[in-house]
Length: 136
Picture (cartoon, rainbow, N blue to C red):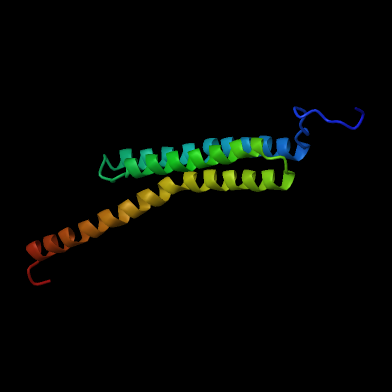
C-alpha cells in the first residue's frame, strides 16, 4: 500500500495561483476605488454643474458596469478552480483589464452622449442667428 494513493487527496494549489488571486483581487478593488469612484464623481459634478442639462446615459453605464464586473468576478472565481500558475495569472490580468475598461466606460458614454446633444444644439443656434440677424 505504500505507492497507493487515495482518490480523495488532491494536489495543493501552487503559490502562484494564490498570489495571482490575491494580487488581482486587490488591484481590481483599487481600480474601483481609485478610478470608478472619481469618474462617477466627475460625471455627477458635471451633471450638477450644468443643472441637469447634460444627458447622462445612466442605464447604459449601469448595464456596462454590471456586465464588466460580473465578468471580472467570474475570472477571479476561475482562478480558484485552476491549478496552473501561468493560467491563474492570465485570468487575473484579464479580470484587471475588464475592471479597468469598465471603470473608464462611463467617461466614454457621457462623452458620446454629450456629442450627440451638441449636434442637436447646433441647428437651434443656427436658427437663432438667422432669426435675430436675417442678413447673416
